[in-house]
Length: 297
Image 1 (tube, rainbow, N blue to C red):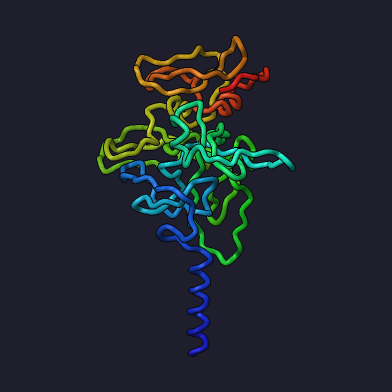
Image 2: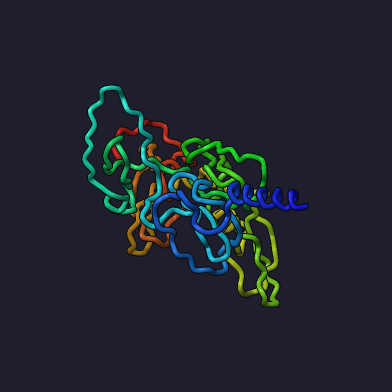
């Protein structure tokens, strides 16, 4: 019996090393996890195991009711160019930045603080693929977990490098986090017909909303649901750029049908139309770009 007990203790110790799930893990990535305030849109669950189960610079951060992969506060979206040193190539080893925040605004055109082999300099960021990762709950297993990607650049354009319940792998992206929330009727007793986006079926589905305490995956019409979460129609590419009536400032891309290129414009943060994309890559995926652009973005 004593030998069986010792075996169980050893097995539990091995399990703890194989699949740690709580707290910030040793040998983690640098940066500070953002502070999250729970609300009706908070998804609870173990959506990562530790920092190295997350793609790129993302960390496995606490959400108050679980953990998920998130960018640290100090890190801008996008990726540093991968180093490909050439033999005999002269390199500037002086450091001109310590982190992404030393490289200007988070808005476009975006730069990141990247290693050039022996120093750190501000360099143009390589874009993430459009959309967000689908949430996958951690599954404890004795089978080794093998990563098949480091970040989005290892995946097809329609996929992202995500936590896949055990390791990192390429998964079909979802347009936004609201589109993968479960339908929530709420505690009230009304019976409003509403639509929610079902990411498994990849379509908008009718459900009954009670009138209070729902979440943002809740649309009055199927058309509104599809506009927010469904596949973007190429018809939006024919629309003119529209900054909207508000006076905010954020740089987006739109497809210019006259030049047949994806170009930057300033969006006022309300109104506008569907010809508006957060990244040039997303614009190109939906609308195409028939001519190579040599201009710097």
